[in-house]
Image 1 (cartoon, rainbow, N blue to C red):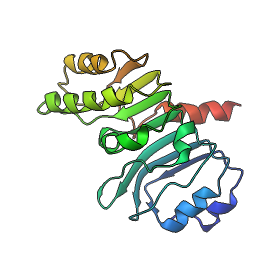
Image 2 (tube, rainbow, N blue to C red):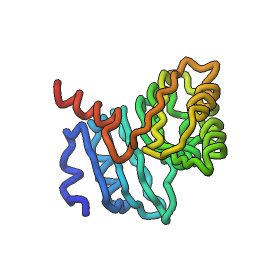
Image 3 (tube, helix red, strand yellow):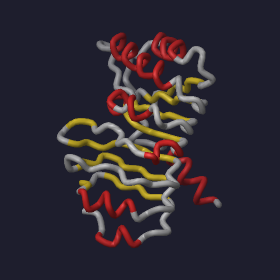
Length: 196
């Protein structure tokens, strides 16, 4: 359960919520955190219709939210135009493509891809299609793809994804680590801000 005093933390710049449930009242409380620059919503469930409030300072977002038992797409909003870093799963990204087109300041996209040797060809083609759309974002400089420790993922997978980014200045970074469970670029952002 989220604390009732959340809306009173108006000077908060970083917030990580994990393994929780978001109600409409919580979304309203998040809207009071106008100085929030980094937000990590990890392994959360949300009531139907809960939207992310306008967060004008938000630069980095980890989005791992379920709604109605399915991965929840990114909510639309003006906050997207200032977003510089997004971490999410390939299924959420696929569901969010129309919304993501408004993330015109996005420079780094980190994606947790679900791949198995048995479905690798289809998984790679689906992710390549997503990356072709994302490659159109004007500021995008890097796409990190995390596949976890799935054994048997061949070298053709990163090559096909790199090809999907052809014509874009974005470079592909491939990792066998897990994104939404382990240390990620957003974790590094939290650490960098702590050093200031």
